[in-house]
Length: 54
Image (cartoon, rainbow, N blue to C red):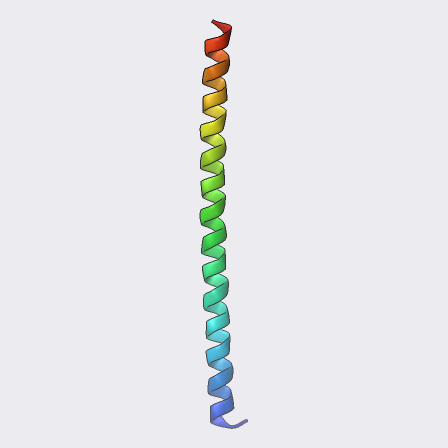
């Protein structure tokens, strides 16, 4: 295999790995944001329920 082809393949693989990593980090951030929003919503609903019941 010519050196240039290998270099192109390695570069493509690196770019792909970088994209996958970025996608994973983004997914983790979105998940964290969703969990935070869910926790805030639950806390708000709980507070509202407690207020209504007293």
